[in-house]
Length: 188
Image (cartoon, rainbow, N blue to C red; front, top):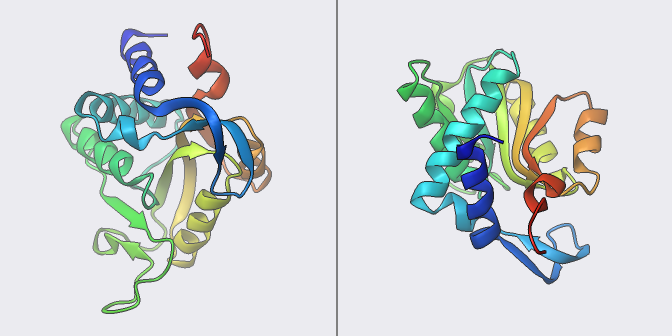
């Protein structure tokens, strides 16, 4: 593991990982919790997340015209990757997919849509994948908007079936870390 990825792993363990009983968004219970926002709202954590996710996306070989994800967990990641894309000389716009349509104004599901066009190839980011339901709901809204999902990436895959569900639906999925990789060598 390179130094930047190892440093991000350490930040995730320190700020985001907790060994304790918790009820997840899916309704399932777990003996651990990964709150990636604690890392992605940290100045060093967000920079490393943006750089490493950009590199992961580039390593996929997939065409990517824009980067987005379901709000709220993906918000900092989407912005970080968009910024890094510009710094690397390959600017890609960012967009966010709401959990519910806006109930006033444009009633939009997608924010940042003025930078998007039909047929664009997009990558969707997520902070943590458990069941995969959140990102798959975002996929449906993105595809309804005429965009093509070329890749789905996550900061952490909890290894609880979400990755398989995403792949079974025909999408390419790449996590930056699996739970096993995150916890490798830790006392947890």
